[in-house]
Length: 71
Image (tube, rainbow, N blue to C red):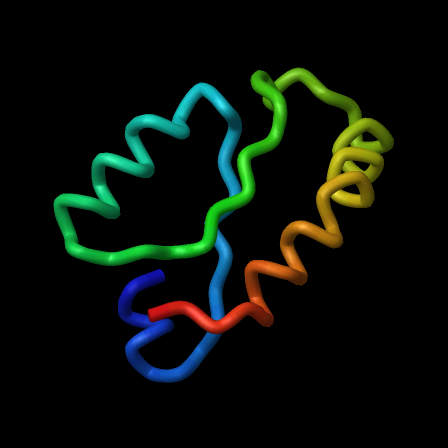
């Protein structure tokens, strides 16, 4: 994500809440402030319909992350 952002390509990381602390620690270690969207954990056993519904539920947050100005 950092590489994409450095080239002017907006990005949003999407992960489950289980990985929130790890993602924040990695961003801090790299000196970056990427946009993240954290969805409920787990997702591996969800059906396609459930995954589509989850994506719909978080779409606005994802779009906000892509369009907001970040340092």
